[in-house]
Length: 147
Image 1 (cartoon, helix red, strand yellow):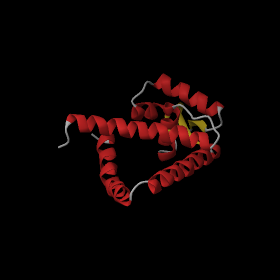
Image 2 (cartoon, one colour):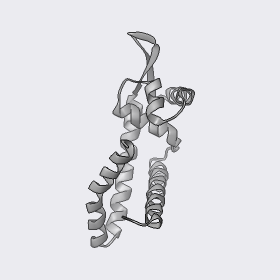
Image 3 (tube, rainbow, N blue to C red):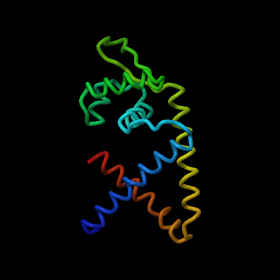
């Protein structure tokens, strides 16, 4: 079992790596980086097309009015579509737009290129260690998502 210090360092490194990749990939794409909350909602809607606004709020662990604001901003930006559920007109269903799909794919291409360049600069042993850690990190992510 890692020490508390090692666990805290892992969290700090993963957080900084995430932020740095987001900012740098956004700069490479020459786009304004979306707020993290908007990105989280877009990723959720991409994974769960037609998710309701209420369910999105529950899954993101936030208030429904917060999701309503995020939805409004993303609809205004052309990145999200909302439609009334035909079975229950009180329910809003969410879908990402083609523009969002393209933007997300572009971001992923830039992020992959950044990681590829950085990994190439590392010694082979470090690259192998990082590649071997990916399955464990996937399991850690799953554990955190589904406690």
